[in-house]
Every structure is written in C-alpha cells, then in structure tokens.
Image 1 (cartoon, rainbow, N blue to C red):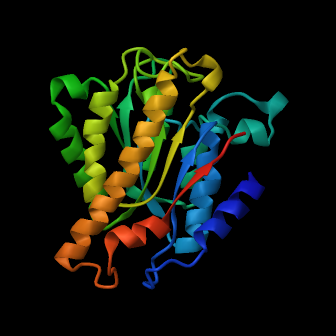
Image 2 (tube, rainbow, N blue to C red):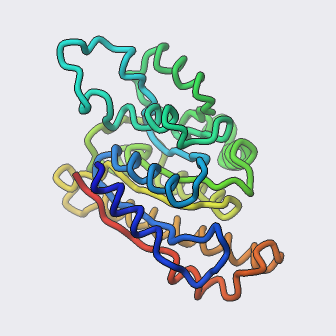
Length: 264
C-alpha cells in the first residue's frame, strides 16, 4: 500500500499544460480491491495539500470502525485496513472534508446499526437504492450536488457492486436489488457539475464475470462516462471564464487525464 501511494503521488506530481497551482493529472484507477482508494486519497492529499469531498457509489458503506468488532486475538494491519474500513480510515487521517461526503446506491443487507452510527458520526449522507424508485434520478442528482457543492474538490469512488448482479455479476460481494447500469449512468451526469479530482472503479473480479464479460463492459463504460463528465465540466468552466488559465479544455484534458490499472 505504501508503494502504491508513492507511485500515485509521483504520477500526480507530473507537470500539466495548465499552470494554475491546483492543477495536477487526474487519475482513473481500475481494480481490484476497494482498499486501493486509501493510497489514492493519501496521494491526493500530498499533492493538493488539502482534504477532498467524496462521492461513493457502492452497495456497502465501507466506513466500518475496526474497533467496533472483537479482534484482539487477530489484530493486525490487515484487520485495521481493508475494503470495509477504507473510508473510516481516510476520515481518521483527515483526508476527507466533513459535511461533503455521500454514499449513493446503498443496498447491502449485513450492515449493523453500529455501522450506521459510525457512518453518521463521519458526516456521510446515505442515498439508498430505493430512492431511485421513490424519488427518481433527478432528486438523487440534486441531493448529491447540494451535499458536495460545485467548487469543492471531490473524489469519486465506484464499487461495481452498486449495480445489480444482473448487470455486473463479476464482483466479490454482490448484492441483489442494485441499480441498473442505465440508472447509475444517469446519476453520474452530476459529475459534469462537480470539480472531480480523481476516480476509481473497483471490485471487478474477472473470474466471476459472465462469459460475455458484462461486468468488464460495464466498468469500461463507467470509466468512459467519468472521463467524459470531467471533460464536460472543464469545457463549461472555460466558457464561463471561471478558470481563465485553461486555454483549450480538450487539449488540456488529454494531458491531465491518465488511466492507471491497480490490483492487489
């Protein structure tokens, strides 16, 4: 994990065509276990010198407090940091901005009330999968936009199990009743209104995928949509004059956006 953090820091320290002080290459990570998000958030903090907001698409909240479960006999770094605790750990390290944190598409059935209390204490807004049926995608988009804000740097983490297994069977912790790929991509249009500084798409497990590669295909499309939304955001800002240093949005994004594959 330390080596991954060092590599990500080096990648994001590369110069870009945009000379403004906040500019850095924005990475799209593909994985792999969700724990890869922690070295990514640490690297962002080193490069930007500030915490970031979080938009987290997932069936599960991944903010488990490791001390809330008995582990005296087997306490180790592996029990402290794993795919179920990464955002709790990130919050403890000051990597996230309190009050600008969102889980979207939550539908895991094994979280305890204690897990939700811990999540509440960190300041997360939870948007359940049922809200798509009750309120529709536009209401969800508004909740995300209002919670995070347009000018706040936000990291986007997409666990593929936010999708129903009918659309993404190739994952290690599938949960029935998830969003369809169409519903998720509709909600992701909110990214064009947000200041996205990095993205990951994780928990894709090729060994469990269908013969047609449905999960890999969905993940590839999510990566494409994420990059497209970041490009659209830069174009909108350049037209409005809010980023005067950005001369050619399309040219700049070609250099600023990098895809990195990370796996355990």
